[in-house]
Length: 233
Image: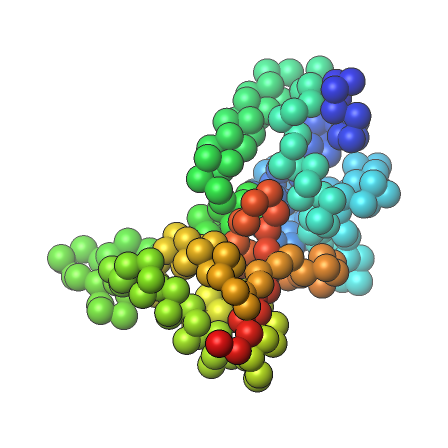
Protein backbone atom coordinates (compact mmCIF):
# COMPACT_ATOMS: atom_id res chain seq x y z
CA UNK A 1 0.00 0.00 0.00
CA UNK A 2 1.09 3.59 -0.47
CA UNK A 3 3.01 5.55 2.12
CA UNK A 4 -0.03 7.77 2.72
CA UNK A 5 -1.97 4.81 4.05
CA UNK A 6 0.38 3.45 6.68
CA UNK A 7 -2.55 2.03 8.65
CA UNK A 8 -3.44 -0.30 5.78
CA UNK A 9 -1.55 -3.61 5.67
CA UNK A 10 0.27 -4.91 2.61
CA UNK A 11 -1.96 -7.62 1.18
CA UNK A 12 -1.83 -9.99 -1.77
CA UNK A 13 -4.56 -9.86 -4.45
CA UNK A 14 -6.09 -13.05 -3.04
CA UNK A 15 -6.17 -11.64 0.50
CA UNK A 16 -7.80 -8.46 -0.80
CA UNK A 17 -10.35 -10.48 -2.74
CA UNK A 18 -11.18 -12.48 0.39
CA UNK A 19 -11.81 -9.29 2.40
CA UNK A 20 -14.00 -7.84 -0.34
CA UNK A 21 -16.11 -10.99 -0.74
CA UNK A 22 -16.61 -11.28 3.03
CA UNK A 23 -17.61 -7.61 3.16
CA UNK A 24 -20.02 -7.87 0.23
CA UNK A 25 -21.70 -10.97 1.70
CA UNK A 26 -21.68 -9.43 5.22
CA UNK A 27 -21.80 -12.85 6.85
CA UNK A 28 -19.74 -15.89 7.77
CA UNK A 29 -18.66 -17.88 4.71
CA UNK A 30 -17.28 -21.38 4.50
CA UNK A 31 -14.47 -22.25 2.13
CA UNK A 32 -17.02 -24.11 0.00
CA UNK A 33 -19.10 -20.93 -0.30
CA UNK A 34 -16.01 -18.87 -1.13
CA UNK A 35 -15.16 -21.29 -3.91
CA UNK A 36 -18.67 -21.06 -5.29
CA UNK A 37 -18.88 -17.27 -5.05
CA UNK A 38 -15.35 -16.20 -5.92
CA UNK A 39 -13.52 -19.24 -7.23
CA UNK A 40 -11.08 -19.67 -4.34
CA UNK A 41 -10.88 -20.82 -0.73
CA UNK A 42 -9.17 -18.90 2.07
CA UNK A 43 -6.44 -21.30 3.15
CA UNK A 44 -2.74 -21.53 3.92
CA UNK A 45 -0.62 -18.38 4.20
CA UNK A 46 -3.41 -16.12 2.98
CA UNK A 47 -5.65 -17.26 5.82
CA UNK A 48 -2.85 -17.20 8.37
CA UNK A 49 -1.90 -13.61 7.57
CA UNK A 50 -5.46 -12.27 7.68
CA UNK A 51 -6.05 -13.98 11.03
CA UNK A 52 -2.70 -12.75 12.41
CA UNK A 53 -3.54 -9.19 11.37
CA UNK A 54 -6.88 -9.49 13.15
CA UNK A 55 -8.88 -8.93 9.97
CA UNK A 56 -10.61 -12.30 9.80
CA UNK A 57 -11.84 -14.80 12.36
CA UNK A 58 -11.63 -18.41 11.17
CA UNK A 59 -13.69 -21.16 12.76
CA UNK A 60 -11.73 -24.40 12.51
CA UNK A 61 -14.15 -26.41 14.66
CA UNK A 62 -15.80 -27.87 11.57
CA UNK A 63 -15.06 -28.55 7.93
CA UNK A 64 -15.06 -26.76 5.66
CA UNK A 65 -13.55 -23.96 7.75
CA UNK A 66 -15.57 -20.75 7.87
CA UNK A 67 -14.45 -17.13 7.93
CA UNK A 68 -15.92 -13.79 8.97
CA UNK A 69 -14.62 -10.22 9.03
CA UNK A 70 -13.68 -8.74 12.39
CA UNK A 71 -14.35 -5.08 13.17
CA UNK A 72 -10.81 -4.31 12.05
CA UNK A 73 -11.42 -6.34 8.91
CA UNK A 74 -14.48 -4.21 8.12
CA UNK A 75 -12.43 -1.05 8.67
CA UNK A 76 -9.66 -2.18 6.34
CA UNK A 77 -12.07 -3.49 3.70
CA UNK A 78 -13.87 -0.12 3.66
CA UNK A 79 -10.57 1.69 3.09
CA UNK A 80 -8.76 -0.63 0.69
CA UNK A 81 -9.24 1.78 -2.20
CA UNK A 82 -7.18 4.42 -0.40
CA UNK A 83 -4.09 2.31 -0.92
CA UNK A 84 -2.26 1.31 -4.08
CA UNK A 85 -3.50 -1.82 -5.87
CA UNK A 86 -0.93 -4.63 -5.74
CA UNK A 87 0.98 -4.93 -9.01
CA UNK A 88 0.46 -8.68 -9.04
CA UNK A 89 -3.27 -8.08 -9.33
CA UNK A 90 -2.97 -6.29 -12.67
CA UNK A 91 -5.95 -4.56 -14.23
CA UNK A 92 -8.41 -6.61 -12.16
CA UNK A 93 -7.12 -5.12 -8.89
CA UNK A 94 -7.08 -1.60 -10.34
CA UNK A 95 -10.67 -1.99 -11.50
CA UNK A 96 -11.69 -3.35 -8.08
CA UNK A 97 -10.09 -0.39 -6.28
CA UNK A 98 -11.84 2.04 -8.64
CA UNK A 99 -15.16 0.38 -7.84
CA UNK A 100 -14.50 0.43 -4.09
CA UNK A 101 -13.55 4.11 -4.21
CA UNK A 102 -16.73 5.11 -6.01
CA UNK A 103 -18.82 2.94 -3.69
CA UNK A 104 -17.27 4.58 -0.63
CA UNK A 105 -18.05 8.07 -1.92
CA UNK A 106 -21.63 7.11 -2.79
CA UNK A 107 -22.32 5.58 0.64
CA UNK A 108 -20.79 8.61 2.34
CA UNK A 109 -23.19 10.88 0.46
CA UNK A 110 -26.12 8.61 1.40
CA UNK A 111 -24.93 8.33 5.03
CA UNK A 112 -25.21 4.55 4.81
CA UNK A 113 -22.62 2.17 6.28
CA UNK A 114 -21.05 -0.57 4.18
CA UNK A 115 -22.46 -3.29 6.48
CA UNK A 116 -25.93 -1.77 6.29
CA UNK A 117 -25.78 -1.42 2.51
CA UNK A 118 -24.61 -4.93 1.75
CA UNK A 119 -26.92 -6.63 4.24
CA UNK A 120 -29.94 -4.69 2.99
CA UNK A 121 -29.01 -5.46 -0.62
CA UNK A 122 -28.99 -9.17 0.15
CA UNK A 123 -32.36 -8.93 1.90
CA UNK A 124 -34.30 -6.98 -0.74
CA UNK A 125 -37.83 -8.41 -1.16
CA UNK A 126 -38.51 -10.51 -4.22
CA UNK A 127 -40.38 -8.77 -7.06
CA UNK A 128 -44.13 -9.27 -7.26
CA UNK A 129 -45.27 -12.37 -9.12
CA UNK A 130 -46.48 -11.98 -12.68
CA UNK A 131 -50.18 -11.42 -13.10
CA UNK A 132 -50.48 -7.97 -11.60
CA UNK A 133 -50.53 -8.97 -7.94
CA UNK A 134 -50.39 -5.90 -5.74
CA UNK A 135 -48.51 -5.65 -2.45
CA UNK A 136 -50.51 -6.25 0.69
CA UNK A 137 -51.16 -3.40 3.10
CA UNK A 138 -48.68 -4.96 5.53
CA UNK A 139 -45.87 -4.97 2.98
CA UNK A 140 -46.39 -1.39 1.77
CA UNK A 141 -44.13 1.20 3.46
CA UNK A 142 -46.11 3.73 5.47
CA UNK A 143 -46.31 7.30 4.26
CA UNK A 144 -46.16 8.83 7.73
CA UNK A 145 -44.22 12.03 8.14
CA UNK A 146 -41.04 12.39 10.18
CA UNK A 147 -42.89 13.26 13.39
CA UNK A 148 -45.21 10.28 13.05
CA UNK A 149 -42.28 7.93 12.47
CA UNK A 150 -40.55 9.33 15.55
CA UNK A 151 -43.69 8.49 17.56
CA UNK A 152 -43.62 4.97 16.10
CA UNK A 153 -40.02 4.66 17.27
CA UNK A 154 -40.96 5.85 20.76
CA UNK A 155 -43.88 3.43 20.88
CA UNK A 156 -41.72 0.51 19.80
CA UNK A 157 -39.10 1.47 22.39
CA UNK A 158 -41.72 1.50 25.17
CA UNK A 159 -42.84 -2.00 24.16
CA UNK A 160 -39.27 -3.32 24.31
CA UNK A 161 -37.71 -1.47 27.25
CA UNK A 162 -38.35 -2.99 30.70
CA UNK A 163 -38.02 0.49 32.25
CA UNK A 164 -37.60 4.04 30.90
CA UNK A 165 -33.97 4.67 30.09
CA UNK A 166 -33.12 1.00 29.57
CA UNK A 167 -30.99 0.18 26.56
CA UNK A 168 -32.72 -1.40 23.57
CA UNK A 169 -30.85 -2.80 20.57
CA UNK A 170 -31.72 -1.20 17.23
CA UNK A 171 -32.01 -4.69 15.73
CA UNK A 172 -34.95 -5.45 18.05
CA UNK A 173 -36.41 -2.00 17.46
CA UNK A 174 -36.33 -2.44 13.68
CA UNK A 175 -38.08 -5.80 14.03
CA UNK A 176 -40.94 -4.00 15.81
CA UNK A 177 -41.01 -1.42 13.01
CA UNK A 178 -40.95 -4.01 10.23
CA UNK A 179 -42.60 -2.51 7.15
CA UNK A 180 -41.72 1.06 8.07
CA UNK A 181 -39.46 2.76 5.55
CA UNK A 182 -35.83 2.26 6.61
CA UNK A 183 -34.69 5.74 5.61
CA UNK A 184 -37.60 7.32 7.50
CA UNK A 185 -36.68 5.40 10.66
CA UNK A 186 -33.04 6.47 10.33
CA UNK A 187 -34.08 10.11 9.93
CA UNK A 188 -36.37 9.81 12.95
CA UNK A 189 -33.57 8.33 15.06
CA UNK A 190 -31.19 11.13 14.07
CA UNK A 191 -33.86 13.67 15.00
CA UNK A 192 -34.68 11.97 18.30
CA UNK A 193 -31.08 11.88 19.47
CA UNK A 194 -31.13 15.69 19.56
CA UNK A 195 -33.98 15.61 22.08
CA UNK A 196 -33.61 15.55 25.86
CA UNK A 197 -33.45 12.11 27.41
CA UNK A 198 -32.63 10.28 24.15
CA UNK A 199 -29.29 8.55 23.62
CA UNK A 200 -28.19 6.44 20.65
CA UNK A 201 -24.68 5.05 20.96
CA UNK A 202 -22.36 2.37 19.56
CA UNK A 203 -21.91 -0.86 21.50
CA UNK A 204 -18.63 -0.61 23.40
CA UNK A 205 -17.76 -4.29 22.99
CA UNK A 206 -17.81 -4.49 19.21
CA UNK A 207 -16.83 -8.17 19.27
CA UNK A 208 -20.26 -8.92 20.74
CA UNK A 209 -22.03 -7.49 17.68
CA UNK A 210 -23.69 -9.91 15.32
CA UNK A 211 -24.25 -9.35 11.61
CA UNK A 212 -27.87 -8.54 12.54
CA UNK A 213 -26.69 -5.82 14.96
CA UNK A 214 -24.40 -4.29 12.36
CA UNK A 215 -27.12 -4.34 9.72
CA UNK A 216 -29.51 -2.52 12.08
CA UNK A 217 -27.06 0.23 13.00
CA UNK A 218 -27.81 3.86 12.23
CA UNK A 219 -25.05 6.16 11.03
CA UNK A 220 -24.80 9.20 13.28
CA UNK A 221 -21.89 11.52 12.63
CA UNK A 222 -18.94 9.38 11.61
CA UNK A 223 -19.84 6.15 13.42
CA UNK A 224 -22.46 3.40 13.47
CA UNK A 225 -24.68 3.29 16.56
CA UNK A 226 -26.48 0.16 17.72
CA UNK A 227 -28.48 0.85 20.88
CA UNK A 228 -31.15 3.31 22.03
CA UNK A 229 -32.19 4.71 25.42
CA UNK A 230 -35.17 7.01 26.01
CA UNK A 231 -35.64 8.33 29.52
CA UNK A 232 -38.93 9.09 31.22
CA UNK A 233 -40.70 12.14 29.83
